Image 1 (cartoon, helix red, strand yellow):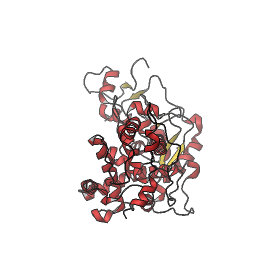
Image 2: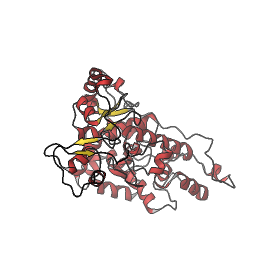
Image 3: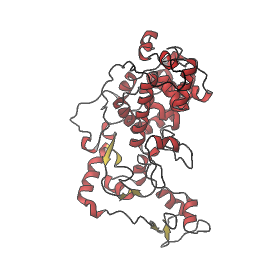
Image 4: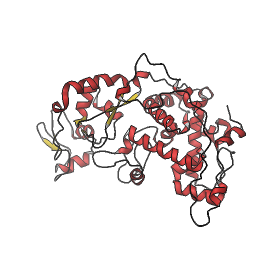
Amino acid sequence: MRPSVKKRASRLVPLAATLLASCAAIPPAPPQRPAARPPVPSIDATPPSAAQAPRKDQQQPADLWTALRASFAMDDCDGDPAIEHWARRFTANRAGFEHHLQSSLPRLRFIQSVAAKHDVAGEFVLLPWVESRYRPVHGHGGQPGGMWQIVPATAGTLGLKVGRHFDGRMDVEASTEAVMTMLHRYYQQFGDWRLVDYAFNAGEFSVRRLVAAHGMPAPSPAIPQLPVRRVTREHLIKLLAIACVIREPARFDVTLPTLPKDEHLVAVPVEHPMTVSTAAAHAGMSVDALRRYNAGFLDNRIDPAHASSLMLPGNRVDQFVDAMRKAGAAADAPPPLHPMEHTVRRGESLWAIAHQYGLSVRELARWNALHGNRIHPGQTLRLEPPGN
């Protein structure tokens, strides 16, 4: 399975001569385009929309894992002993690994379709495993957020909105499109997927300076012998390690899960504001299930001004679209925006209400001048800071 040196070298366009020719500045992008990779078996390369919801009579695409392996462009399991070491660490708890991969599969498959559209190497479909295990991590303050672990400053350069009501880093569709666009641009610049990973971890300009000072890395070894930080080197090792598990699951005694086609995530256009609870009811899902794939909406509002679509499993799309059509725009007018309130029902706790709206208990208590967490039925709670 390991590609020959000659084959790997064809993927790597030498840029050293071009980069070192510049005397006074960071070298510009080379005029020569990197060599193209072989075509990848179809996996519905264009991410589906509501108008393209899965149909039973459509031709079945290539198996998800087969297509992903075919799109790999870097070295295999034997490229470096550290790769197998991390692969075995990832799969040490076989049941836990398989369970987590199964729960991540809808996101993984969607990312795969976007990566294919942008002609990004298949290993980067697995990048969220290294970053967050595909979890939509809240990036409080200036911390990295979303499954791609993007810091707020980078989110701004990628065009992702980060605010009190919406965080584009946690939006599956928006963040994946932004990251894949960036990775494709990195490859056009460096022509080496290993350097693309370094750029994702350490920054584009850091890698440009590195190449200007030391030249392009040789096709082998698998982990370039460049003076990078340990965390950056280990980031690439981990990415190749999880790809190693996907290449040879039997080698690690694991079984890769499957995802029925009608559970593939679909981006469904949303034209009018609505509450998360209303959207969940339209789709026949629980609020928690809807939020699982739409974590970018931080409170109970879905506003097209922030994101123009919802991510839904394919088997929920028709019900959602039909319910929206029947309800009509006026039937689901948006809740009052300033302020937004919740009336406490019997049995509800402050924690449960905060969780429902994606808030912290501390915020909810402060906005309502509560001393402690005691609330009572019929009490009205603000869901936004006073004065908004």
